[in-house]
Length: 111
Image (cartoon, rainbow, N blue to C red; front, top):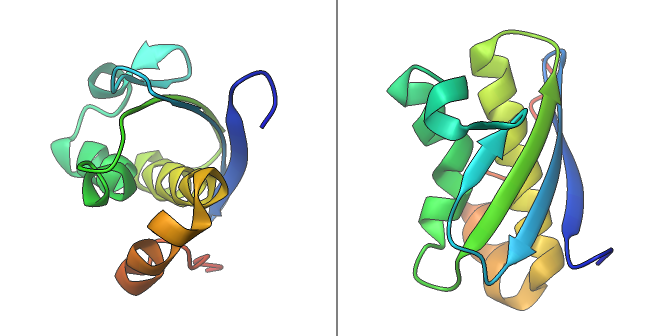
């Protein structure tokens, strides 16, 4: 953990997402400096990007800050999901790993 944040990277297709996760936050998600709903206009992309957080919503709240580049919106949402999942595992492997692995959120789609 650096400066109170857990850092991770997610990739999908040509998209790369750098994720900072702050424990004990208020649940805000910002992508490229904008709120999630403003950056990912389609609801499907919003759900895909935050699915790892929603899977574990009962355990702890986080603030998430993401910088994402490259690819289209669907690829970027997938990269954000992988980055968030990897950051959650860094927070507490015993708590999050098995649920995220079973859901397939820790698997890199290399296509």
